[in-house]
Length: 175
Image (cartoon, rainbow, N blue to C red; front, top):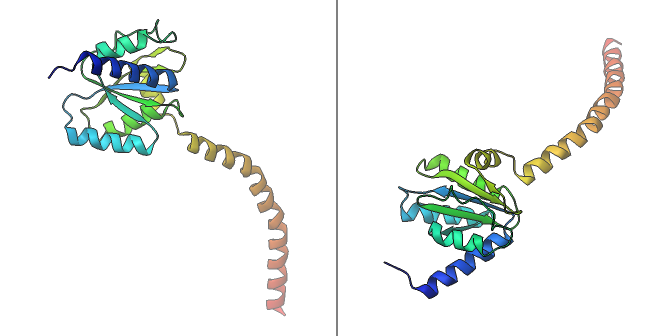
């Protein structure tokens, strides 16, 4: 069923706003996924502050052309049925959400991405972004790296006291 010109204009405006506010965007081919699978993807994305949109590539091209940042973006990878994931808070979250969903649904294939500067990301780059750790994982790694020297120092400092207590304990047993 064809959509009216007004609905197309509304969708283009909404897409242009999503692209303008997004720190990261990823697109994936979804041919073969059911409506229930797409609803599941939307629920997972919502939990990760990612917005999912399904739109015709022609409308996406119009939305990209209407934004100064994305006018020079390469749109040659926008082929086939694509679902787009947008995040205004995290650069890699859209790629990660789509890649995580693709593990259990092999019909979904990452194809294209856009960064906040308007640069087009090829399939290999989008897949590489998806394999990066999340911000929370990176924070945890940083805290463990910073805490490791202190915990090792405390282990060494307690070692002398522990050794002295063991010597006294052994001595008390022998008396």
